[in-house]
Image (cartoon, rainbow, N blue to C red; front, top):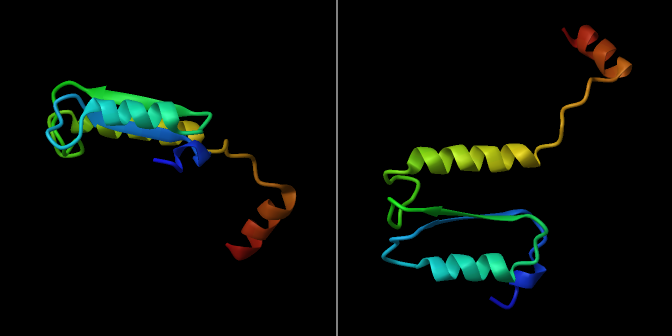
Length: 90
């Protein structure tokens, strides 16, 4: 808990509202305390503790894919040297 303010990477917290192991207050605490400039909280209404295997697993997968995709660097065009190297290697 003491280290949360030092978190600098993007954070996605996925939490089931009806989780029988840990509640939404813990997820909210993480979101409020971490030092990341980018943080998101996904609250699920129809899932329990194993959100990746529960009723909303497709929602979890979609949101995770969007979150990670938004962090990816845009793909740039290969330089002239890279293109000629690719031709030689082929």
